Amino acid sequence: MVVRGAAPREAPVASTTAAATVVVRVRAVARAVDGHNGRVSAERLTGRLLVATPLIDEGVFHRSVILVLQHGDDGAQGVVLNKPLTAEVDAILPGWGDHVSEPATLFQGGPVQLDSALGLVATSATAVSSVQELWPGVGLVDLDAVPALVASQVEAVRVFVGYAGWSPGQLEGELRTGSWYAVDARREDTFTLDPDALWAQVLRRQPGELSWVALLPEDPSIN
Image 1 (cartoon, rainbow, N blue to C red):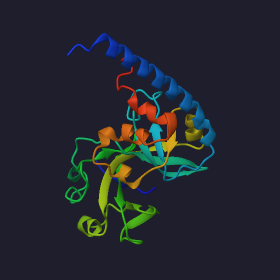
Image 2: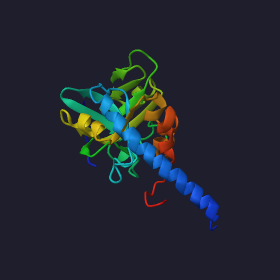
Image 3: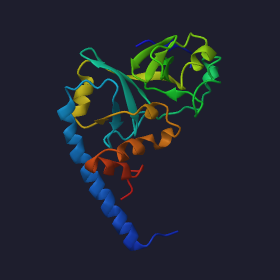
Image 4: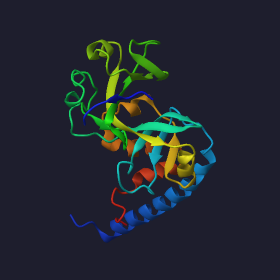
C-alpha cells in the first residue's frame, strides 16, 4: 500500500427497566455474534468492513469501522472510516483541502505511520489518471498528483493519516476472539457524510440479531 509522508427529565421507572432489559438482551446477542467470527477467519477480507465489537472499548478502534484495503498471507492493511480529526487537509497536503468530501477534514486511518497520508477516491470511470483502482468504484490516489486534475475525474475524495495494519495471522486471531464483525461494504461508507453515526448505521443494516448490537449505549456502564 502506497502512502505519502506528511507532518502531522427523570424517566419513569417502568421505561428505565424496559430499556435495561433491551440492553442486557443486546449484550447477550453481541457476545453470541462474537463467537461466530471465527468461522470467517480464513476468508480474505479485501474490500469488506471490519466493525469493532463491544470487546474493543477504548482507543482509536473503539466503535470503529475499518475498510480492508488488502488482506493476504502477509497480513492486512485498512483504514478507519469514522474517526475525523480537527486538522485541516491543507495543513499537510496543500491544495487538496478544496477538493475533499464533507466533512472536509483529515481522518485518522489508524495508529500505524501517523506521519503518512493516503487518499481514497470514488470513481465511476474505468481508468482515472493518478488513481490505482482497488476494486470497482474505489481507488487509491497519488497525493503527489495535481488535486484539481484528480478531483475533476472523481466523485469523492477522502484523506487519511495513518492506517491500521496486522501482521500475518493477527487479524484472523482477532476475528476468532471476537474483536471484529466482518461485513460487506458499500461505497458510501468510505465517503460517509456522518462518520459519527457510521458504526450504528452499518450494524443496523445487517441481517438477524447482529443489527441489535447497534442499540448498545456508548457508555457500557449504562444498564
